[in-house]
Length: 321
Image (cartoon, rainbow, N blue to C red; front, side, top):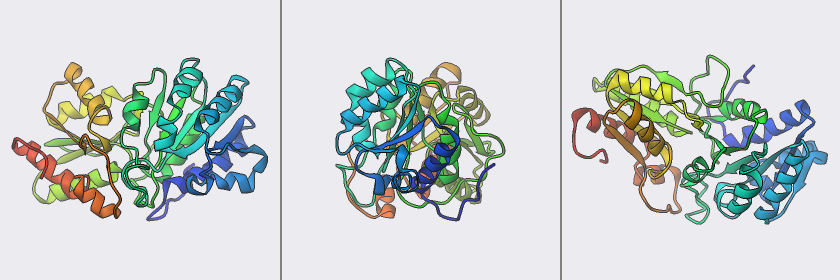
């Protein structure tokens, strides 16, 4: 049963609430934090269920090592930190101690993408999907809204191997309510369309829906496929929407290298070759700024998605406007 989601809700708030729910459901669950609990919202566990909370300090390599040891003893540790730290500082420990033995460690990278509260490029992580997608045995999940964070966490808690969960910082509009249970590895068609398919992940799916609405006023019928699980990827859904429209635009708050766009191109090159354009962050780092300004500068707003999709339908040589 899903809870009602307000008009604007933050993924990190849903994360903190769901951690407490998971602890009450499952005696195996423990929460480990990298000295950022007030930002990741893991502090809700520290207050409400302190016996299941471990503050590991600014020591990400040790954070992962301890979690691996706990998982090897039958526990299910959930790790909280900023994505820029959790993906990079302890990557060797993730690879050797978690991924190679296939342990059920839940790596939760908060403050992902560009919209991180003006923290700037040092604290923005725009390549985490690429890094974790390439890690053998690692499931990679990027929920579209706060409601989906909870559903993804409930599903991920029982996943047999390691999971990377990508979360954002600020309140954001919700996606349409799901009609069925959340399953890792299953995409969701949010809107039917005939002229172009917009395949998006994370909160970019909300902007993709906005873009599809704009396109409809111009006589362009755009399908929107939301892909919350980047790995394992719902190849059937991607191939089906490509076949139905003949054109695909991918959209993500992530580098165009190695993320959703790359994954979609890999699938379609083998299963349904159609024109594909990738909309994301170019081969660069971000910067500090207001959310709307960053979305505009890096070409991630609903307006940019609509223009890129229209350009693809028209067959113009570039999708960036």
